[in-house]
Image (cartoon, rainbow, N blue to C red; front, side):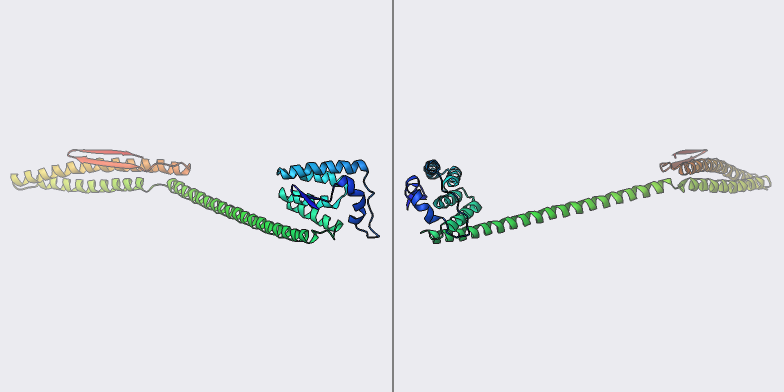
Length: 287
């Protein structure tokens, strides 16, 4: 055999094919033998082989494999299977190369390079096994990464749902508190009632001082008691006005607050400011 661009050929196919064909095909009695190719098929196969050798030498391994496959289909020459395996190896089509080598060994088990081809088949098997193991490893890593991303997304979703549930609960609690009647209106009203009570007490004391002034034995004592009675009377009047205003404001505010709570409306907290001055009282507030 001689090498042509990395491919092997036993002489020139078109000239020696008839003499070598019966030696290369297995002679098992039960095996069906394909009919020998015609002269035209042999010549065509020879041309295809020469073209494949050129393609192989130029590094066009896929083209070489296609030409060799066509040549083998015409001639069934086993050496073409070996060359086909070489071309597939060059193209890194390892599974096709292995299959071509195996078929070559089946059809030419006693070939000179049979042991080398078997070694090559074993090497390809190991390389394919390593590549498959690598694919499995990469696939598992990708699956693990996908599961990790999904788990992280699920944790984020659960956390978001929990945060939303807390937000809604807090908002509901605020609405509930806002809907409850405020105690401040009744505090204001209570202060007003207390003010009225204090004003009445001061008024009673003022009346007593006025009576004592009328019964005083001396003019000086009478004037002092009368002045005290006047001062107390002014304080009582201021207290009455302030207490009345606070009582009215508190009651009105409480009625509005109760009405809003009954309707489910949220009312802002009230603010009341009372100012007391000499002879006057002022109330300022919102509710």
